[in-house]
Length: 132
Length: 261
Image 1 (cartoon, helix red, strand yellow):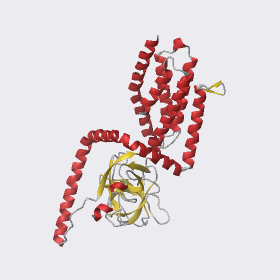
Image 2 (cartoon, rainbow over the protein chains, first blue to last red):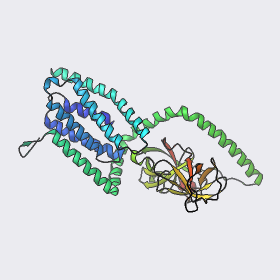
Image 3 (tube, rainbow over the protein chains, first blue to last red):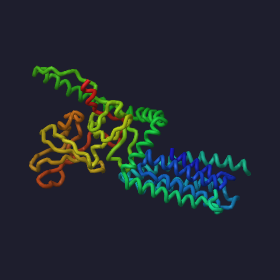
Image 4 (cartoon, each protein chain N blue to C red):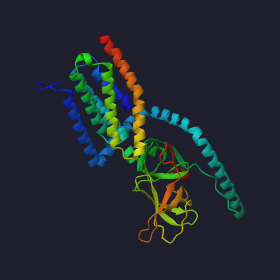
């Protein structure tokens, strides 16, 4: 669920013709979503919220710095995948249960995100294709 | 989005969100009471929209575990049946009439187990409304796994036996030696206050001793693995929990109110 949420926020933020004001709103939406997730599942209120806000802001910043011609579906997939990996690694570093279980959890989490990333990238490709 | 004629940039909002996130994290860590208050509010709000999904998830988990658990449960049932028959025969010979057994437990599902408090506590979907009381024993597969520590109307928090703040009187079944079960927050269990000279062996079973009407005596806890370094005339014993503490999905809560019915 947090993967789908984060990927959706990245997709909406990086879609063609997305205004900065909309990106900012999405950063705060990702923050609030992360906070709810923390309060419900991680018991570290603010951590996922901060990760979501930061990773989406970084993705938006990089996206704006790239020339419009270079904003391809591959770059989108790299940025979206990067936000997910960053989130996973930060949670992994703060995991308190035995490291073997944490590594397994991180691996499973990253592998499960691949199909979601593929679907989101396809959606981006479809949307960006229409704007060409 | 503009403030005082300056256009705000997404990265700036990212920095603010990180700062705000860490302030929140610090505040919640510094004031655990506030943290619990917020957690319970959010959990109560999300309880109803989440319920159908939680039940679906339980159903899928049950279905996948059913085949694996079936053989071990069948074996356990056969062992218990044999034990029951022997005990019934012994009681019959002694002329003792046993009262009819009563339904004294409430079945509950585990709804929340935070990673950083994995060995300390978890949350279940039954509460005060279901007749659960604070301090009641919680079991899984017939073995003690903890006690109710906090209670809401439709939820309860369980302090696990592996928590370092968990202490419960226990007895070694074979020798009737009395001690106290305590966890270490890392999944290990110890039986404390066993005199050094006692010769307890690996495999001896440990169960609850008389505590209160909410923790009845005789609930199996686990078995002895071996001794630790003696301290001040006592030899702590390592205990292997009988329940699968890493895979807790459904539990039973002892209910004194139901016994009294």
